[in-house]
Length: 128
Length: 115
Length: 237
Image (tube, rainbow over all chains, first blue to last red; front, side, top):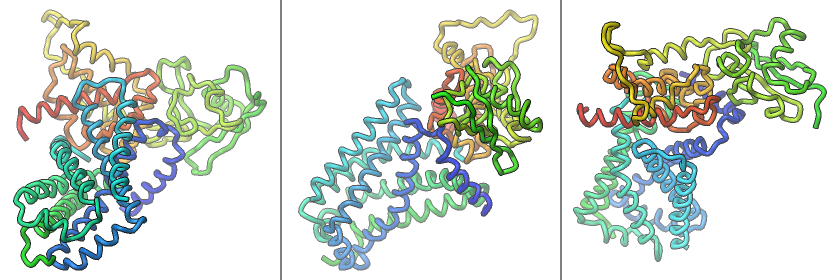
């Protein structure tokens, strides 16, 4: 498995050299995968903090106070963006798979990204 | 390394979570106004069966969806396969569900809440 | 900008790429370049080609990281200044230099049930095929595949998942599913629902983007996902 990881890492490096990836649908795929990964890694932290409500409410308040900081707000914006991107990307995927497919895939992909950005921007604005 | 069953579970939990995510986003945008505090959050969620149902469903769905998603990544990019891959998926699924269930319980019906 | 000399890097299995200086000619294809190297610079270079007119798919190689038919790739389209890098097709075992082992590709073709499932005998009347039916139109969209393996080389999911049947094999399965003469529906749906089946496709679309015949394996795989989902609900888990 170790050698597989090395192979995987090598492939990733060689991968960035493989120009066969430079098309919009591939970017949509990698964005969907990375956003899902980031959310999956963030989730345990989020859930642990929330559970402090029953084990250590003062600590929870401490964490919530952190959300006033600009850096945290920026991170929150990033998270909301990832969430919106992942969801709209997923819906686009299912529409392509299960509904009559048309060649306006790129338009759909673009609007998915746009809606994601809009929602996260809205969140950010309200947060200031 | 997805077969039909895992694929369907992934898609079904995705569809299930779409309205839940929209609801969660709406709540977040509402809650963030005027700053966040434990008291404010808990005053909404404490003792509420509806929030338990909403976020409880979310916790189950995200545990399944996340476990299957991470399975694909860990196989294609990490080379994990066979029994180890299955074990990984189940461990992730149960961990996410446990954390989620704990969090949902903590903000709804857990005893000994402060504020 | 006219180049008199091309700097050609060949990624051979020795892990140390060979660099050759190749004279530039008018109307030169990548296959011409490779052939020149083998004929004039290094007779030990192994590579494949056959028709050299874009019909057989034998000359497929990685050109600057993109899987292409080298006989149909004009050198001017891919030169980076005066440099070009040529390597064996990705995702397949390398036999030597630029020649890859096509066995895994064809084995998966068969595993996906890309074989005709006929039940008629020679004494039965020929099964009628309605050329205008939706199913036939769908099938026709995928039957021009010449098994060149460009889509297989372009797909990242093939790279990460050794069991994945790949775009070409799955597209063929889809054409047979839509073929009025083919009676293997259950066998095909089962074959594409396993751990290497169509559900591993992440729709990154590199197959469709790079197919030299302008086929669309990604949509064919989406079709398979639709059909297997339908049968999932009918037959239960």
